[in-house]
Length: 236
Image (cartoon, rainbow, N blue to C red):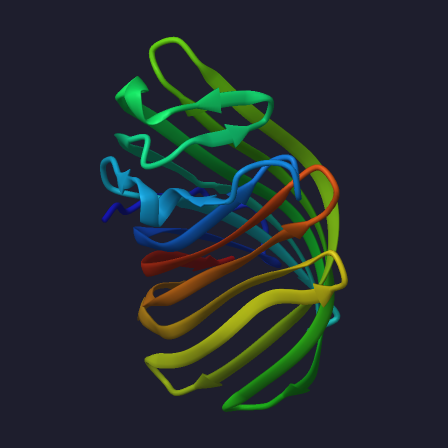
């Protein structure tokens, strides 16, 4: 796990950074939807290397209870393994005799969130808000002579939730974004503890789950990834 440093910006700003180690439970793919072959990158292939995500979250507070924040999140997973069965993916045909295949999954996320705290007391903060999420996703499967690739950039509206129980030197935090629609779902939630080490600075440890995907005409893709998360939190 990694630590990161930041520079103070203003008295009403905070900055959070997070990394950790991730584990992919499933990564189901069918491109195009209906006519492509259904396969699972996480189950039919092996993860190649350690999954190390990175998140940067600047936040601005005004009027005590109002918060505007951004999120810059980078996430990618490499897979490898022999083609387990004939796969039609993104216009490319893969057969078992092609040998070793390399898979790649990218899901970068850029978000803007407004949240209002409806409860803000000595020990409790409870807030709700709205998030505009922009996803930058890529799925790729390739062998020595064949490659299929699907790129997707899109907008997803989400509901933001924030709950924090605070003591003098530590707090329990549950926060995230999520929404379910007829075309898919998106959930990104963290649960864990924040420890205050010095004034305006703390670190957090906990568990994050990223779950979601889309079921539309040109792509079917759903994935779930669990993270052991570690982050830093600065308030100015």
